[in-house]
Length: 104
Image 1: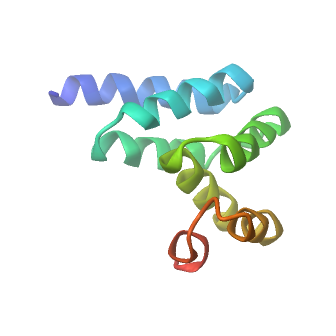
Image 2: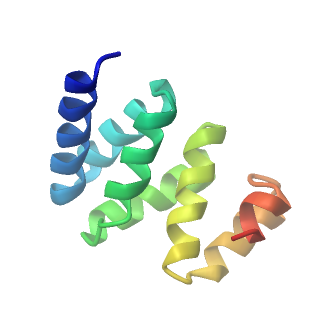
C-alpha cells in the first residue's frame, strides 16, 4: 500500500471517529479487522478521540462482541479513559487476556 492510500484511510477513519455514531464505529472496526500495522495505528489514534455517547456505547459492544483485534482495541480505549470496571468485566469473562487488560 502506498502512502497516499494511507493518508486516505487515515482521513476516512478520522471522519468516522469525529461523527462516531453506530455505523461510524462499525466502519472503523471493519477497517481495523482488515488493516495492517499502519492502519491499526490510525484506528488507535482516531478512536481515542471518540466522545459521542452513541459511539462510546458501540465501542463497548465491540469489547464484548467483537473479534479479537476489535476487543483488544476497545479494551485499550477504555483503559486510556480509566474505565476499569468495564475492562475488568471483559477480562473476567475471558474476552481479553491479562496482558491486554492490564499492561500499559
